[in-house]
Image (cartoon, rainbow, N blue to C red; front, side, top):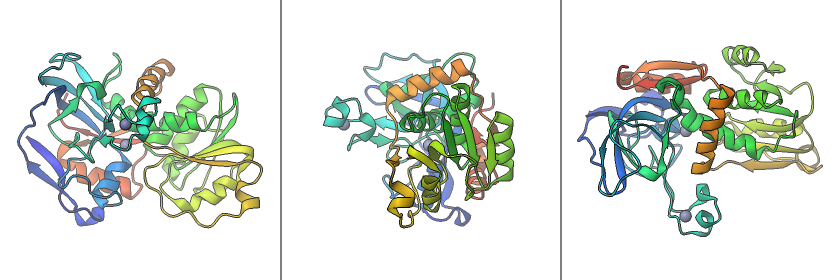
Length: 335
Ligand SMILES: [Zn+2]
Ligand SMILES: [Zn+2]
């Protein structure tokens, strides 16, 4: 099969990915093999390719927003049958025994593995997944729409939950890419007032179209104090301003897996009055199931840009350079 692998992690301009011929993987016990139709492009793929995240598996195949069809079933697997459409997301496995797993916080499992980082992902014609970590996808959601929901959507949903926005509250969103534009739709449809700050003019237009109450530049300030805010941009220098924009008791959530350093904070200006900063680490399978159902019910629509499979490197370069609005997806198998 054809697959993209991270041959030499480094700046995307230097071509860290290689389009290679590989053996088609065989599903092991409890696994299924998925023939990939579409794979979303997530900023985490860029972090893996560029070496912002340490190498966990040399030559890994990135991609953790995988939509495809089961085409082989490993020994002892019974949840899916060949022909079933499934989604493969970021969380690839957890131990199931540690204190975090036992209390329902499997996203914090120290032995968790992740698709497209610890195990090969979906920038490939086929991938394997433990059946317990695959998602059945709602009918009526086409492949290209479903892909960005699997990480951008699910992580954004977890970030929104951790923001504990009060009903009708004011939510700030910093950075407006794949995850943010899905999260904004959920918040808006649940009655939030959404304020978007992003350096991309195209993203500001999209935010306005989706119903944002205000839009402004990336390092700008919203026109009103915020009850909660989510930082999607991987830029730590946004954090002090975002904290200063919070009302008393407000919560700032950092949604990304990687953030550049946060500048020094001043207690009175940034943290006092019971403001809080929270991070988001991966997601539980329950988050995923809940979000896929919610997104379908609320009619969340992903703005997507499709790239042919053989141009994955170009999609990542466009993501790195902020040339994308919404979410990029790779068309691995023509519909
Ligand atoms: Zn565990
Ligand atoms: Zn992701």
